[in-house]
Image (cartoon, rainbow, N blue to C red; front, side, top):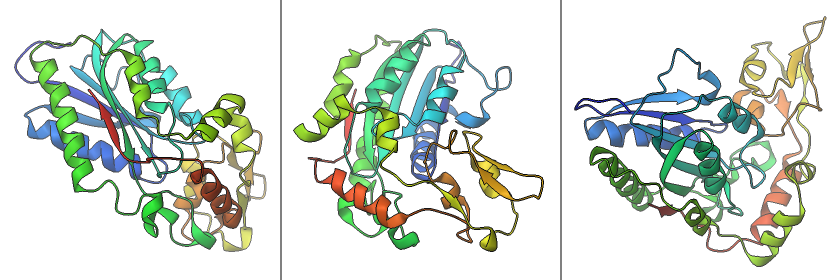
Length: 289
């Protein structure tokens, strides 16, 4: 932890549909408003020796995917350097489907990197599943996060982060009991049982593969550059190829593509999202500090 009057924060995030990036920017604004130097870093761009690891506070945020930390984000988190007993705050964004243990899992990852976790949050945001390939489900229905995070949620987020910042400033950085973050869960009994008996890969298996429609492709390489798993490449004819052994079915590439050259069976996606949502309860934003 750096000495001196100005406190510093590194806000690390992974974002696929933009929800987590927006909340990370809110966090940056909150800490900057307190006089902190708060830097925003996408996990995919984190480089040892380039980005400081001696910040006074680490804020880490990821979206929920398949009731878990996204595979590509977990890989990047585990590549982070070991910190210097740095205080940390974790948050996740989710489309008001089934909540899970992701804040707890993030806290465990950071604890393994020698961070002291002071709090966490599960924040509702618009679900990114697209209705017939058009608007997001979360932009159409409140049950799937329309209008979230709202002003009340953002106020709660501000209060939680300010509480953590105050603890850092006063050097009261004893970590919380990480098990407390499990209070952020909002699974129903059925969903909880399914989570215990199904693997991440098994849950992915219910969702359709991404397909590339060459007739719609303009060759911009947006999908190739956006893919975090290395599943998208080009063959000798300059045609996009998708390696299903590497694809995480996060659908980030479909958000990037404005011509629907990257697409999927959205009816199947929405069907399973709605089915899983039936197992959820009290899918609201929650905070622990």
